[in-house]
Length: 254
Image: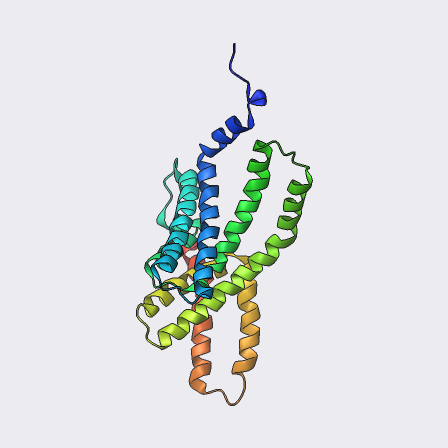
């Protein structure tokens, strides 16, 4: 008797083939990101983020993040030899570097929401396009339709939220640096460079920075604000917006 054709394969056989793919490992990584964020947030709510349990889930989250971005980069560059400049301009490389930074840094709840949001939408999309068809759910089923509708309606809104959350985290790191907390200046330098690249490449980050700029400019303009604070704010804006000009110069010289 001939082996079953793909169309005649059982649900378990289809699931087994799906689980064996590299893309499923990517999907599983995002699921573990969400689990890690959930359990670390739970430990924070219980005022025990510094326990072994809390630290485990925090580290697990960023190990999972690194795995997912590593898989994407492997699939993207396995047959090519990109330059260092090209790699640094890759969003996946940028987020992977930041994930490595948070992995080796002191746990901080504010580092998690952006990655959780991205993973949430990746899990939804993969579930609709791969998991549901594998278990026999039609693409136009009510569940698949609701997932697609949610992604279409809210993806941009949550991406804008990520851009603002990343700026909130930058402010937090800046305050830590002012207080000379251990490792804060290194984290600020690396993360500030990351935000500069995001400003260059992401329309959402650019919009968020400009909105923040307008609001802070109006506050800084108050006569009661010391001149040193105004000068510092000008330097911060110059730093954040320096990436486009420097990158443009690099592109011309290549």
